[in-house]
Image 1: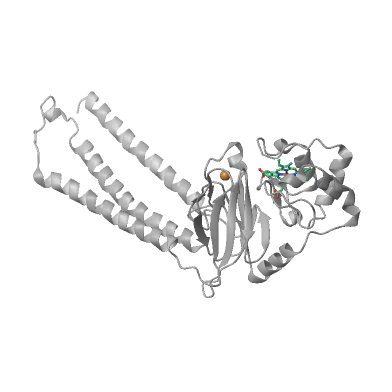
Image 2: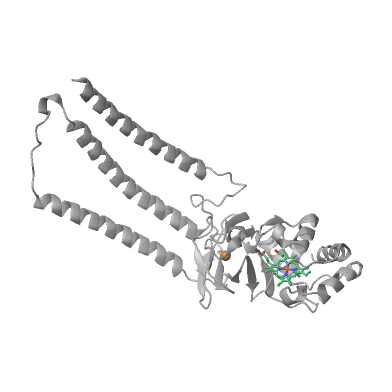
Length: 355
Ligand code: HEC
Ligand SMILES: [Cu+2]
Protein backbone atom coordinates (compact mmCIF):
# COMPACT_ATOMS: atom_id res chain seq x y z
CA UNK A 1 0.00 0.00 0.00
CA UNK A 2 1.45 3.39 -0.91
CA UNK A 3 1.44 6.25 1.59
CA UNK A 4 -1.23 8.04 -0.41
CA UNK A 5 -3.66 5.16 -0.16
CA UNK A 6 -3.01 4.84 3.55
CA UNK A 7 -3.93 8.51 3.89
CA UNK A 8 -7.23 8.11 2.06
CA UNK A 9 -8.14 5.13 4.18
CA UNK A 10 -7.52 7.22 7.27
CA UNK A 11 -9.77 10.00 5.97
CA UNK A 12 -12.59 7.50 5.46
CA UNK A 13 -12.08 6.00 8.92
CA UNK A 14 -12.09 9.49 10.46
CA UNK A 15 -15.35 10.41 8.72
CA UNK A 16 -17.10 7.21 9.77
CA UNK A 17 -16.01 7.56 13.40
CA UNK A 18 -17.06 11.24 13.28
CA UNK A 19 -20.57 10.23 12.24
CA UNK A 20 -20.69 7.59 14.99
CA UNK A 21 -19.62 10.14 17.63
CA UNK A 22 -22.36 12.58 16.52
CA UNK A 23 -24.96 9.79 16.56
CA UNK A 24 -23.97 8.69 20.06
CA UNK A 25 -24.19 12.32 21.19
CA UNK A 26 -27.70 12.72 19.77
CA UNK A 27 -28.89 9.48 21.39
CA UNK A 28 -27.38 10.45 24.76
CA UNK A 29 -29.01 13.89 24.61
CA UNK A 30 -32.37 12.31 23.78
CA UNK A 31 -31.93 9.91 26.70
CA UNK A 32 -31.20 12.76 29.08
CA UNK A 33 -34.30 14.65 27.94
CA UNK A 34 -36.52 11.65 28.57
CA UNK A 35 -35.23 10.98 32.08
CA UNK A 36 -37.50 13.29 34.05
CA UNK A 37 -38.30 13.01 37.74
CA UNK A 38 -41.91 12.17 38.50
CA UNK A 39 -42.66 14.90 41.00
CA UNK A 40 -41.40 17.69 38.76
CA UNK A 41 -42.81 17.31 35.28
CA UNK A 42 -40.98 19.08 32.48
CA UNK A 43 -42.58 19.80 29.11
CA UNK A 44 -41.29 16.59 27.57
CA UNK A 45 -43.14 14.90 24.70
CA UNK A 46 -41.46 11.58 25.60
CA UNK A 47 -42.97 11.60 29.11
CA UNK A 48 -46.74 11.88 28.49
CA UNK A 49 -49.40 11.79 31.24
CA UNK A 50 -52.57 11.97 29.13
CA UNK A 51 -54.06 9.82 26.35
CA UNK A 52 -53.56 12.18 23.36
CA UNK A 53 -49.92 12.80 24.36
CA UNK A 54 -49.41 9.05 24.86
CA UNK A 55 -50.69 8.18 21.39
CA UNK A 56 -48.45 10.86 19.91
CA UNK A 57 -45.43 9.48 21.80
CA UNK A 58 -46.17 5.90 20.73
CA UNK A 59 -46.62 7.00 17.15
CA UNK A 60 -43.32 8.93 17.22
CA UNK A 61 -41.54 5.79 18.41
CA UNK A 62 -43.10 3.83 15.55
CA UNK A 63 -42.01 6.43 12.97
CA UNK A 64 -38.57 6.71 14.58
CA UNK A 65 -38.15 2.92 14.44
CA UNK A 66 -38.99 2.75 10.73
CA UNK A 67 -36.87 5.75 9.77
CA UNK A 68 -34.08 4.52 12.06
CA UNK A 69 -34.09 1.18 10.26
CA UNK A 70 -33.91 2.94 6.88
CA UNK A 71 -31.03 5.02 8.20
CA UNK A 72 -29.15 1.91 9.35
CA UNK A 73 -29.64 0.10 6.02
CA UNK A 74 -28.55 3.14 3.98
CA UNK A 75 -25.54 4.00 6.16
CA UNK A 76 -24.36 0.34 6.19
CA UNK A 77 -24.57 0.06 2.39
CA UNK A 78 -22.79 3.40 2.11
CA UNK A 79 -19.95 2.40 4.44
CA UNK A 80 -19.68 -0.95 2.70
CA UNK A 81 -19.45 0.68 -0.73
CA UNK A 82 -16.96 3.32 0.41
CA UNK A 83 -14.66 0.76 2.01
CA UNK A 84 -14.99 -2.05 -0.48
CA UNK A 85 -14.66 0.04 -3.64
CA UNK A 86 -12.06 2.53 -2.48
CA UNK A 87 -9.16 3.21 -4.81
CA UNK A 88 -6.67 0.34 -4.34
CA UNK A 89 -3.14 0.04 -5.83
CA UNK A 90 -4.27 -2.96 -7.87
CA UNK A 91 -7.01 -1.05 -9.65
CA UNK A 92 -5.33 2.35 -9.60
CA UNK A 93 -6.23 4.50 -12.56
CA UNK A 94 -8.66 1.94 -14.02
CA UNK A 95 -12.32 2.72 -14.62
CA UNK A 96 -14.79 0.60 -12.61
CA UNK A 97 -17.35 -1.53 -14.50
CA UNK A 98 -19.98 0.76 -16.06
CA UNK A 99 -23.56 -0.41 -15.49
CA UNK A 100 -26.45 1.29 -17.26
CA UNK A 101 -29.98 0.87 -15.91
CA UNK A 102 -31.61 -2.06 -14.12
CA UNK A 103 -35.39 -2.39 -14.23
CA UNK A 104 -35.38 -4.56 -11.13
CA UNK A 105 -33.44 -2.09 -9.02
CA UNK A 106 -35.44 0.87 -10.31
CA UNK A 107 -38.68 -0.92 -9.44
CA UNK A 108 -37.41 -1.92 -6.00
CA UNK A 109 -36.36 1.58 -4.99
CA UNK A 110 -39.62 3.04 -6.22
CA UNK A 111 -42.09 0.53 -4.83
CA UNK A 112 -40.52 -0.08 -1.41
CA UNK A 113 -40.39 3.65 -0.44
CA UNK A 114 -43.96 4.14 -1.70
CA UNK A 115 -45.11 1.26 0.51
CA UNK A 116 -43.23 2.66 3.52
CA UNK A 117 -44.75 6.12 3.03
CA UNK A 118 -48.18 4.53 2.70
CA UNK A 119 -47.78 2.63 5.98
CA UNK A 120 -46.60 5.82 7.74
CA UNK A 121 -49.55 7.73 6.29
CA UNK A 122 -52.13 5.16 7.42
CA UNK A 123 -50.64 4.89 10.90
CA UNK A 124 -50.62 8.69 11.26
CA UNK A 125 -54.20 9.02 10.01
CA UNK A 126 -55.27 6.45 12.60
CA UNK A 127 -53.73 8.41 15.48
CA UNK A 128 -55.20 11.70 14.24
CA UNK A 129 -58.64 10.11 13.96
CA UNK A 130 -58.42 8.56 17.43
CA UNK A 131 -57.57 11.93 19.00
CA UNK A 132 -59.74 14.29 16.94
CA UNK A 133 -62.89 12.17 16.92
CA UNK A 134 -62.75 10.98 20.52
CA UNK A 135 -66.21 10.77 22.05
CA UNK A 136 -66.96 13.32 24.77
CA UNK A 137 -68.28 11.46 27.85
CA UNK A 138 -71.06 13.03 29.92
CA UNK A 139 -68.59 13.39 32.80
CA UNK A 140 -66.27 15.65 30.79
CA UNK A 141 -65.38 19.08 32.14
CA UNK A 142 -65.84 21.78 29.51
CA UNK A 143 -63.57 24.79 29.30
CA UNK A 144 -63.42 27.60 26.79
CA UNK A 145 -59.85 28.83 26.41
CA UNK A 146 -59.37 32.20 24.74
CA UNK A 147 -55.94 33.31 23.58
CA UNK A 148 -55.06 36.98 24.10
CA UNK A 149 -51.83 38.84 23.49
CA UNK A 150 -50.18 37.59 25.79
CA UNK A 151 -52.30 35.67 28.29
CA UNK A 152 -54.94 32.95 28.53
CA UNK A 153 -58.57 33.39 29.51
CA UNK A 154 -60.38 30.29 30.83
CA UNK A 155 -64.15 30.09 31.15
CA UNK A 156 -66.02 27.09 32.59
CA UNK A 157 -69.56 27.83 31.33
CA UNK A 158 -71.23 24.91 33.12
CA UNK A 159 -69.51 25.72 36.41
CA UNK A 160 -69.83 29.51 36.27
CA UNK A 161 -66.08 30.05 36.69
CA UNK A 162 -63.85 32.57 34.89
CA UNK A 163 -60.12 32.65 35.46
CA UNK A 164 -56.85 33.34 33.68
CA UNK A 165 -53.51 31.74 32.93
CA UNK A 166 -53.67 28.85 35.40
CA UNK A 167 -56.01 26.16 34.18
CA UNK A 168 -57.40 23.77 36.80
CA UNK A 169 -58.69 20.37 35.70
CA UNK A 170 -59.56 17.19 37.57
CA UNK A 171 -57.29 14.17 37.33
CA UNK A 172 -58.86 11.52 35.09
CA UNK A 173 -58.84 8.00 36.46
CA UNK A 174 -59.12 5.69 33.40
CA UNK A 175 -61.80 3.66 35.25
CA UNK A 176 -64.05 6.75 35.68
CA UNK A 177 -62.75 9.11 33.02
CA UNK A 178 -63.22 12.82 33.69
CA UNK A 179 -61.42 14.32 30.70
CA UNK A 180 -61.40 18.03 30.02
CA UNK A 181 -62.63 19.15 26.62
CA UNK A 182 -61.35 22.54 25.52
CA UNK A 183 -62.96 24.89 23.03
CA UNK A 184 -60.21 27.11 21.68
CA UNK A 185 -60.90 30.70 20.58
CA UNK A 186 -58.78 33.76 19.98
CA UNK A 187 -59.46 37.40 20.83
CA UNK A 188 -56.86 38.80 18.49
CA UNK A 189 -54.32 36.75 16.56
CA UNK A 190 -53.11 33.21 16.10
CA UNK A 191 -52.03 31.41 19.29
CA UNK A 192 -51.33 27.75 19.97
CA UNK A 193 -52.23 25.70 23.03
CA UNK A 194 -49.45 23.26 23.83
CA UNK A 195 -48.84 21.40 27.04
CA UNK A 196 -46.52 18.69 25.68
CA UNK A 197 -47.22 16.11 28.39
CA UNK A 198 -50.99 16.38 27.95
CA UNK A 199 -51.72 16.77 24.21
CA UNK A 200 -50.38 17.92 20.88
CA UNK A 201 -50.59 21.52 19.69
CA UNK A 202 -53.87 23.08 18.64
CA UNK A 203 -54.07 26.63 17.34
CA UNK A 204 -56.48 29.31 18.58
CA UNK A 205 -57.50 31.19 15.46
CA UNK A 206 -59.67 34.34 15.26
CA UNK A 207 -63.17 33.62 13.91
CA UNK A 208 -62.69 29.89 14.15
CA UNK A 209 -63.63 27.34 16.79
CA UNK A 210 -61.05 24.65 17.49
CA UNK A 211 -61.15 21.79 19.96
CA UNK A 212 -58.76 19.66 21.94
CA UNK A 213 -58.98 17.46 25.01
CA UNK A 214 -56.82 16.10 27.80
CA UNK A 215 -57.31 13.38 30.41
CA UNK A 216 -54.31 13.70 32.76
CA UNK A 217 -53.68 10.48 34.70
CA UNK A 218 -51.56 12.02 37.41
CA UNK A 219 -52.00 15.09 39.63
CA UNK A 220 -49.44 17.89 39.55
CA UNK A 221 -48.61 21.05 37.63
CA UNK A 222 -47.93 20.69 33.91
CA UNK A 223 -46.32 23.46 31.95
CA UNK A 224 -46.28 24.54 28.35
CA UNK A 225 -46.45 27.69 26.34
CA UNK A 226 -48.08 29.41 23.43
CA UNK A 227 -46.52 27.59 20.50
CA UNK A 228 -47.39 30.07 17.78
CA UNK A 229 -45.61 33.40 17.34
CA UNK A 230 -48.34 35.88 18.32
CA UNK A 231 -46.35 39.04 19.00
CA UNK A 232 -43.41 40.33 21.01
CA UNK A 233 -44.29 38.58 24.26
CA UNK A 234 -45.24 35.23 22.79
CA UNK A 235 -42.22 33.82 24.66
CA UNK A 236 -43.77 34.84 27.99
CA UNK A 237 -47.23 33.51 27.25
CA UNK A 238 -46.78 30.47 29.44
CA UNK A 239 -49.27 27.74 30.18
CA UNK A 240 -49.77 26.18 33.60
CA UNK A 241 -52.23 23.35 34.07
CA UNK A 242 -52.92 22.26 37.61
CA UNK A 243 -54.25 18.71 37.62
CA UNK A 244 -56.16 18.35 40.89
CA UNK A 245 -57.63 15.40 42.76
CA UNK A 246 -61.46 15.37 42.47
CA UNK A 247 -61.78 16.86 45.98
CA UNK A 248 -59.20 19.59 45.29
CA UNK A 249 -60.90 20.42 42.02
CA UNK A 250 -64.34 20.66 43.64
CA UNK A 251 -62.90 22.92 46.36
CA UNK A 252 -61.20 25.10 43.75
CA UNK A 253 -64.43 25.47 41.75
CA UNK A 254 -66.32 26.32 44.95
CA UNK A 255 -63.78 29.02 45.85
CA UNK A 256 -63.76 30.49 42.33
CA UNK A 257 -67.55 30.78 42.35
CA UNK A 258 -67.52 32.96 45.45
CA UNK A 259 -68.03 36.69 44.87
CA UNK A 260 -64.95 38.86 45.31
CA UNK A 261 -63.82 39.32 48.87
CA UNK A 262 -64.65 42.83 50.12
CA UNK A 263 -62.41 43.84 52.92
CA UNK A 264 -63.12 47.30 54.38
CA UNK A 265 -59.46 47.69 55.29
CA UNK A 266 -58.64 47.79 51.57
CA UNK A 267 -61.35 50.26 50.56
CA UNK A 268 -58.79 52.95 49.66
CA UNK A 269 -57.20 50.63 47.13
CA UNK A 270 -60.56 49.52 45.84
CA UNK A 271 -61.41 53.18 45.22
CA UNK A 272 -58.22 53.56 43.16
CA UNK A 273 -59.15 50.48 41.17
CA UNK A 274 -62.71 51.65 40.56
CA UNK A 275 -61.76 55.19 39.57
CA UNK A 276 -58.92 54.50 37.16
CA UNK A 277 -58.73 52.80 33.78
CA UNK A 278 -58.22 49.39 35.45
CA UNK A 279 -61.98 48.78 35.23
CA UNK A 280 -61.98 49.15 31.45
CA UNK A 281 -59.67 46.18 31.09
CA UNK A 282 -60.22 44.08 34.20
CA UNK A 283 -63.21 42.50 35.89
CA UNK A 284 -63.62 42.07 39.64
CA UNK A 285 -66.96 40.52 40.56
CA UNK A 286 -69.14 42.93 42.55
CA UNK A 287 -67.31 46.11 41.47
CA UNK A 288 -67.87 48.36 38.49
CA UNK A 289 -64.89 46.65 36.85
CA UNK A 290 -66.20 44.49 34.01
CA UNK A 291 -63.43 44.80 31.41
CA UNK A 292 -62.35 41.74 29.49
CA UNK A 293 -59.26 43.05 27.73
CA UNK A 294 -57.10 41.82 30.62
CA UNK A 295 -57.35 38.89 33.06
CA UNK A 296 -60.28 38.61 35.50
CA UNK A 297 -58.91 39.65 38.89
CA UNK A 298 -61.78 38.44 41.11
CA UNK A 299 -59.61 35.66 42.58
CA UNK A 300 -56.19 36.98 41.59
CA UNK A 301 -54.53 35.71 44.76
CA UNK A 302 -55.56 32.11 44.03
CA UNK A 303 -52.95 32.13 41.27
CA UNK A 304 -49.25 31.36 41.82
CA UNK A 305 -48.06 33.54 38.98
CA UNK A 306 -49.02 36.76 37.23
CA UNK A 307 -48.74 37.89 33.63
CA UNK A 308 -49.13 34.38 32.17
CA UNK A 309 -46.37 32.84 34.23
CA UNK A 310 -43.89 35.68 33.60
CA UNK A 311 -43.48 36.35 37.36
CA UNK A 312 -44.44 34.80 40.69
CA UNK A 313 -47.47 36.34 42.35
CA UNK A 314 -45.62 38.15 45.17
CA UNK A 315 -46.18 41.54 46.79
CA UNK A 316 -43.09 43.04 45.10
CA UNK A 317 -43.96 41.66 41.67
CA UNK A 318 -47.56 42.89 41.86
CA UNK A 319 -46.38 46.39 42.78
CA UNK A 320 -43.73 46.38 40.07
CA UNK A 321 -46.29 45.11 37.54
CA UNK A 322 -48.71 47.94 38.32
CA UNK A 323 -45.94 50.52 38.23
CA UNK A 324 -44.35 49.32 35.02
CA UNK A 325 -45.54 46.09 33.37
CA UNK A 326 -42.70 46.34 30.86
CA UNK A 327 -40.21 45.70 33.67
CA UNK A 328 -41.60 42.16 33.86
CA UNK A 329 -42.91 41.65 30.35
CA UNK A 330 -41.62 44.15 27.78
CA UNK A 331 -44.28 44.85 25.18
CA UNK A 332 -47.19 43.61 27.32
CA UNK A 333 -50.51 45.25 26.45
CA UNK A 334 -51.11 46.64 29.94
CA UNK A 335 -50.03 50.29 30.13
CA UNK A 336 -47.93 51.64 33.03
CA UNK A 337 -50.60 53.33 35.14
CA UNK A 338 -48.46 56.22 36.49
CA UNK A 339 -49.93 56.05 39.99
CA UNK A 340 -48.51 57.79 43.06
CA UNK A 341 -46.63 55.61 45.54
CA UNK A 342 -49.49 55.91 48.03
CA UNK A 343 -52.07 54.82 45.46
CA UNK A 344 -49.83 51.97 44.34
CA UNK A 345 -49.47 50.67 47.90
CA UNK A 346 -53.21 50.94 48.52
CA UNK A 347 -53.95 49.19 45.24
CA UNK A 348 -51.59 46.29 45.95
CA UNK A 349 -53.13 45.96 49.42
CA UNK A 350 -56.56 45.79 47.77
CA UNK A 351 -55.48 43.22 45.15
CA UNK A 352 -54.03 41.07 47.92
CA UNK A 353 -57.50 40.73 49.44
CA UNK A 354 -58.82 39.17 46.21
CA UNK A 355 -58.41 35.56 47.34
C1 HEC B 1 -55.48 48.91 28.57
C2 HEC B 1 -55.94 47.82 29.38
C3 HEC B 1 -55.42 47.67 30.81
C4 HEC B 1 -55.48 48.57 31.83
C5 HEC B 1 -55.98 50.01 31.78
C6 HEC B 1 -54.98 47.89 32.99
N1 HEC B 1 -54.61 46.62 32.68
FE1 HEC B 1 -53.95 45.20 33.95
N2 HEC B 1 -53.61 43.96 32.40
C7 HEC B 1 -53.96 44.20 31.10
C8 HEC B 1 -53.53 43.10 30.29
C9 HEC B 1 -53.68 42.97 28.78
C10 HEC B 1 -52.90 42.18 31.15
C11 HEC B 1 -52.26 40.85 30.75
C12 HEC B 1 -50.83 41.13 30.40
C13 HEC B 1 -50.05 39.91 30.05
O1 HEC B 1 -50.05 38.94 30.82
O2 HEC B 1 -49.42 39.93 28.97
C14 HEC B 1 -53.00 42.75 32.48
C15 HEC B 1 -52.53 42.11 33.62
C16 HEC B 1 -52.78 42.57 34.91
C17 HEC B 1 -52.49 41.83 36.11
C18 HEC B 1 -51.92 40.43 36.17
C19 HEC B 1 -53.08 39.47 36.21
C20 HEC B 1 -52.72 38.04 36.02
O3 HEC B 1 -53.41 37.18 36.57
O4 HEC B 1 -51.76 37.72 35.31
C21 HEC B 1 -52.89 42.61 37.15
C22 HEC B 1 -52.80 42.26 38.62
C23 HEC B 1 -53.39 43.83 36.60
N3 HEC B 1 -53.31 43.78 35.23
C24 HEC B 1 -53.88 44.87 37.35
C25 HEC B 1 -54.27 46.10 36.81
C26 HEC B 1 -54.66 47.25 37.62
C27 HEC B 1 -54.77 47.27 39.13
C28 HEC B 1 -54.90 48.26 36.75
C29 HEC B 1 -55.26 49.71 37.07
C30 HEC B 1 -54.31 50.40 37.91
C31 HEC B 1 -54.71 47.75 35.41
N4 HEC B 1 -54.32 46.43 35.49
C32 HEC B 1 -54.90 48.46 34.24
C33 HEC B 1 -54.60 45.29 30.61
C34 HEC B 1 -54.86 46.46 31.34
CU1 LIG C 1 -49.82 33.45 21.91
